Image 1 (tube, rainbow, N blue to C red):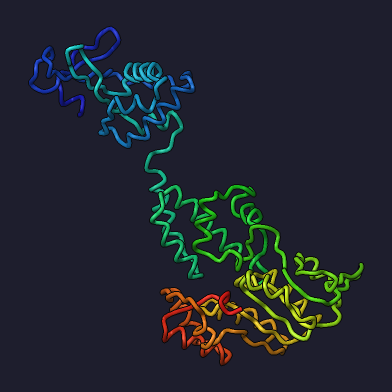
Image 2 (image 1 turned 60 degrees about the vertical axis):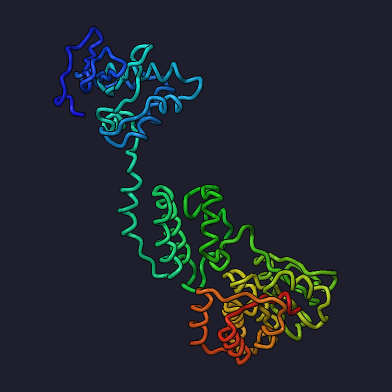
Length: 416
């Protein structure tokens, strides 16, 4: 209510004016009145105790404009059980400086403070160095129009940001920008950077721990981070083989080990010779299947775990091994659209060297033999549309057709 629209009394000794509201007599139990210092003065915020500044910030969050009336009981709750005296002291200071207008009601015990409003909350927020309550919303509305990504997954994630709180949307938009730069920073468009999550956090926000668990979960739900070369820990290539790997500084006899081994990419790239070369390479996507096959692998074969969509570091290491030991490949992935896409990406290393490769247990019969299958999603169908425009091996053509006709997909665990 504008102070010009009501009749205010002359200020009392404290400088506070009073205005009776409505037709009820101020002395009746239905009496209501406003209190306000009509002479507005800047609050002495520089000498306020820290607890006052903190409490004022909480109150001002609930007052976007001068027309917002705040319930006194609610403001007291913000102060906490032991903060009532602090709240009253802050109230008196704000009232004396004309920063608030108070509304009181009369009951049998006298006048009781009912609600208040800040006369110019935006000015007080500026004085305290506080942001406006809708500042994040305005910033997000401006930021949203700048999001433009060539990659479909980045564009889809950007559209989803409207479902987040504005502050969260702003932070996650920065992560999308960082992921786009991360992809562009690779040696070429098809080979993104590679590193741990801490590496990406440092790249995106200048701090190895600046991305929250909630934001990591959000990223995982929308992106194949491994395909972008972002892994939880330093990358390790898992393989089972019996050859001896020779380097300039010595050799490692893999056949002397009773199980598979994990080698970092640097260890693989240090190899200059492997002997004897395997008769064939077997690539397996499912980790459980890999563990199972590693215990019974023929001595003349080599088994490598394919960690989903092959990240850049894995592809580089696999190509190096393949140049040292050229041999055909059998690639086993889930009988689903992603499995076809992963097998094609992995098999491109063999194609580049003119070596044969074939899908293993990835055909229509394999899908039919599975004891359990799941329905294809809309994303699966869209991926099938793209894959069917590529040149696929006959087995994968048959698998894609079987999935299309049945509307189902499966997992390779049931095939080994």
